Length: 364
Image (cartoon, rainbow, N blue to C red):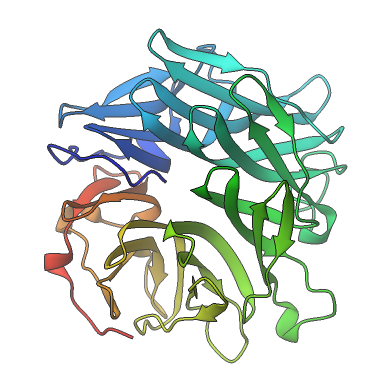
């Protein structure tokens, strides 16, 4: 998610008619990619004005967009995939916004059956990276509709200013997010099947660095799955997801890279199930992570954490948040943050501004 620029005004709340899957902000614009009842897949709030729903690049609504990234108001990427019924296949979908509006951009597919992009990040107009996964399994070919993690290959596409091309990938598994560190340097995170049976059947985090044209897999601690990654620089990288160590009951997973090694960081205690879907770094002492919390015997609700440079603390959502699950967050140093996701079929907010001043609960 983009963390540069300045938001003059916080964006207004969103109600349940639009589910937010990804957020990015630059200058005075906030962009959200997600899903509405019609063909709209992107919404925009500029200078604090009401949200504007934007159809996808061809207006058909056939594509589902899961990632968005803005480097400028006239340089915005949105990625996802669309299902082709005639061939029962998923095909990558990439759209770009310039000064003239949104256009679809040609993107490669590496597998015959399923090719899915879920995140995109960019260093500049001629350097972007989109990630996801591909598999030879046809969509919905298994009882639960998704092949097992071991059946997927990570999918990486790179933009050179003129074309998207398939790039080397870090191996088997599912990539969920990527963040730019420098020109042609990216961290990517996701989930992999363990090389040997893990305790309780847990999955393992997938963490890899793209540099010098190739991938270098890291060995992060713990078991679990990662959904989001963000950084302020090469020695300050955060990754978040869900801990699947059987010794703990499905709590948030937070990892940090200091330029030398990855370490697990304790999250504020939470009873029941909890996980983090996204993270954004506004500054080294201003990091936000969002997800969901399901207390034992209770309903589901948003989970919001903030790092102030020394410890993580839980932040209470506004009363209008309701039974929402947060999937995305964007922020500015000293400006607070804006988070979004999806809500129950009521008029509860599924997107709202956050401030660390309202934090509550323990730290590490």
